[in-house]
Amino acid sequence: MATAAPSLPLRPTSSAAPPFRVLPGFNLTLGYTLGYLSLIVLIPLAAVFLKTAELTLAEFWNVVTAPRVVASYKLSFGMSLLAAAINAVFGLMLAWALVRYSFPGKKLIDALVDLPFALPTAVAGISLTALYAKNGWLGQFLEPLGIQVAFKPLGVLVALVFIGLPFVVRTVQPILEDLDTELEEAATSLGAQRWQTFRHVILPIVFPALLTGFALAFARAVGEYGSVIFIAGNIPMVSEITPLMIITKLEQYDYTGATAIATVMLILSFALLLIINGLQAWTAKRTGRDR
Amino acid sequence: MAGATTLRLGAAADFGQTRFEARAATRETPLVKWLILGTALTFFAVFLLMPLIAVFVEALRKGWETYVTALVDPDALSALRLTLIAAAIALPLNLVFGVCAAWAIAKFEFRGKHFLITLIDLPFSVSPVIAGLIYVLVFGAQGWFGPWLAEHDIRIIFAVPGIVLATVFVTFPFIARELIPLMQAQGKEEEEAAVVLGANGLQTFWHVTLPNIKWGLLYGVILTNARAMGEFGAVSVVSGHIRGQTNTLPLHVEILYNEYQFAAAFAVASLLALLALVTLGIKTWIEHRAAAAYRDSQDDAS
Image (cartoon, one colour):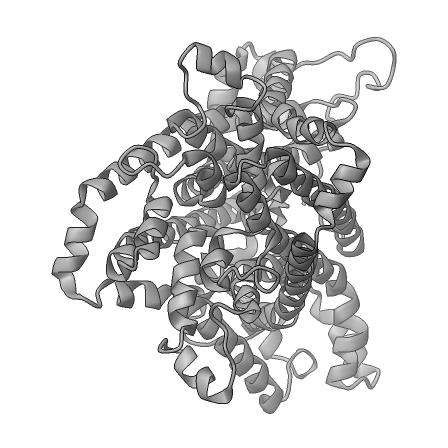
């Protein structure tokens, strides 16, 4: 892909004088962008931190380390990690199948992979609950095995796997599509087994994208609300996710409590965003693709 | 965070499997192949296909009559109206923003550009619940502008403006994120030529830039629309769940479900699922057209 090389490098942009610009509209569009961004995103987000600053450090610590809240972190982070890991394994297989094999209905399946992006989370939530309830299509087979999914922590996992799947498939798929067959041929002609070729030639190329997909799925899962609350059962200390704790505090008009928990989640989200940006840069470097 | 939602140009190229399966060096033994394929397709069927089918089966469980009754219920219709209003306001706002942001970022060099792109991505990584919370903190009864708004009898939280704001927030980056990489890849030679030949800014955008980005733009628009109509968490926080007034379709689904009116809940849900399917259909069509246009331009260049 062509990168956006400046076509008329009349003057380096870092010089003190304002750069010469052929195209109009820079001030207008950048000004509008910054204004709209501040109004819709930055200023309201700042409200979270300012509201939290009303608490003393001890009060803040008490709210965010209350046993019920800590239990929600464990559930949210634990299940999100597990869901992202499951998606990394099966998402890679699905992406591999979509890129390398031909089978009937492939185009339809390829299109439907994006379903969790497009399907409203509440719809996914009630549908998964119906499937995994005791008399549901899947629940009726799991029940005799002693596996309960709906209204248990396992239900949270199922919902998070559903919403995270496209992230892994869609980050890995283009990398697999671009893979040079020559590399594999070289490995084979040098005597490598198929598994060795995969492990030592293909996986190192795909790995940054796989990790990016994992991180994207994890980030999405941690904040997810709609699809989880229907299937989780929302039992305190057992199956309450962290976003639900924020809602619970809000419904009790405990605004500072809700905001304190939101602060913890926001800081984690920002950290994840930085990590994901780094991973995407690594993917681009490793594969020579631009983002 | 948009890496997974951007337009895929290679998607419609269907030579992949013959390229890989034709040669011994790039294919697995049949056993391994069927194992991978079988596992992948089972996973797909259990986690994606079954939830989709279940929506429609559950919706029609009590027959067409119940289904239609649930859809023409006055509360359902008012929820539908509010959902359409929220999307109709959020979409043009984020469209204008997306085009402006992409123009500034893709066509000019300035400091802090990468930081700005990261900031635009922020709403993707914020939990929808927090997206709702921030507007409660600003406009709610206890919020910054709460007392002033109450004095002037303006309701934002637990009213339509709050729902619109939350919808704008959660769909904020989609169009910008679609256009930025696209316009960066296209460079600015064509626009500069147009300006040098005497076109003004709007003419340049309309006649030169827009034809180049139309598929990406359309793609961003349908993603924004799908998310705007389907948003649940953020809207739930600011809505107040007043029936017939501040309920959107996804919130209406929740209320019906919590009242054990399962068939009605799934009937309304099936409407949203249909919207998702239409979105995916248009998306696939756009990818097809964009890939064809891309191949044509490659052919012209060579």
